[in-house]
Amino acid sequence: MATASDSIRFILNDTDIVLSEVAPTATLLDYLRLDRRLTGTKEGCAEGDCGACTVLVGRLADDGRGGEKLVYETVNSCIRFLGSLNATHVVTVEHLAARDGALHPVQQAMVDFHGSQCGFCTPGIVMSLYGLWLTNDTPRRAAIEKALQGNLCRCTGYEPIVRAAEAAAKARPSAIFDPITRTREAVATKLKELRPTQSITIRKDDDCLIVPADTAGLAAVLAEHPAATIVAGATDVGLWVTKQMRSLNPVVFINGIAELQRIERSDAGLTIGAGVSYTEAHDALASAYPTFGRLLERIGGEQVRNMGTIGGNIANGSPIGDSPPPLIALGATVTLRSKAGTRTLPLEDFFLAYGKQDRKPGEFVESIFVPALPAGDLFAAYKVSKRRDEDISALLGAFRISLDEENRVTTARIAYGGMAATPKRANAVEAALTGQPWTEETIRTVQPVLETDYQPLTDWRATSAYRMLAAKNLLMRFFLESAGETAELRRFEEVA
Image (cartoon, rainbow, N blue to C red; front, side, top):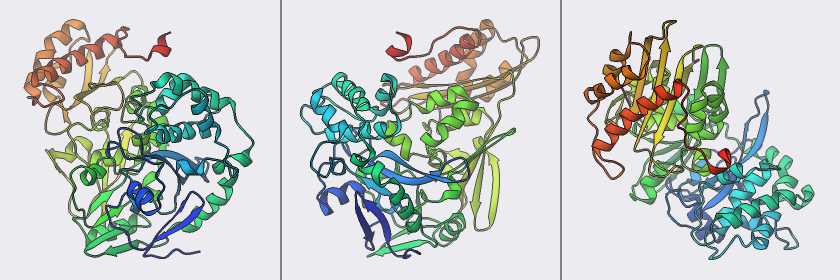
């Protein structure tokens, strides 16, 4: 069935929702609590940090075999806009209990193992553990802790919650008792029917919300509205609304465009659609460039990684974005598209100045190409932040070195984030390294050259002096690890 072009349509628990009056900045959390009175979902930080607002969103995704699969992911409803929900299945904590009132195994385990005290954040924790329960029958402690990265609990402490997750994994009832398992096939069929075949446009007073059906539609929309705000994961734009109270108009939601969510592998490298989330990109990037995978695991919490996109992290242009430095070090290129066509440029050239990128009116980031790492090349990326998990970078260094048979540097690509107004290569350091022996003495000689490449600022994340010292030390760390030293931060259970 064709869907109307003036309505957002999705499933909320077991109810079909049709919204023809939606403000561009209306959040899922406000809709759940104020309009639907589903108050199990809480508001805590309103910026995607505490996880009290966690719900599951199901969507159809490429299964890697030419077909589709229905996946459910935890998201922060406080920064998820209603306009991004077309053709999805939203599941809240109220949906978990069985029809006879019995608690879901995840909920029951939280009770049995005293995983809740004040209870405010408990529904969000339950939903994060439920997402894990759906996808992992026998989660190890590391997987449980990863699922809980985006959930704050100041009362109970995490040990009872981890024990609850372990117990819930062992209590897996027949499919009929789980609300998602028993309806998965029917939901998948309905979501296919809800996909738009043309752009959805909703006007409310002076505001305008647009959901293009494909990239051609997106190009046409931006040709007409070149100043529109493009929203993919909303992990940054959401805060413009919840923290800065900004009015955005018009807003174009692109998270449902299948063409932007493709990952193509070839001998030459990876092509990643701009709409691919951190979660979706993880396996491909980790397989080709292992240190990249470890970096992605430190971006936000699970909910943020499920929402945020590689393309959005680039288009945002932040000087402390986590993905641009390693992509620049790897020699990535970015393809921009508009109604007039496409153009490709080196990623490092996309960033012009603070808050300014080489994106013409009507253009959008379509894809990123990451060249394969030649055999023998050394590559690593390191993030420095106040917290190990779910924190913004103070700085991030990415390094790629090629050596000849005499262990001399033939090529060097080094990029830092947090050291300048944009993600930026260390050109002077690269030149100083080229042709030199790859030794500790060379590194110590070259470290001061970083002061030629960067003059970092002082802010609340780090002082200028700290950033410079840390940047120099990361270069040394890269050398030491290439020589067999280990300096990686690890979780307790990984070394126990």
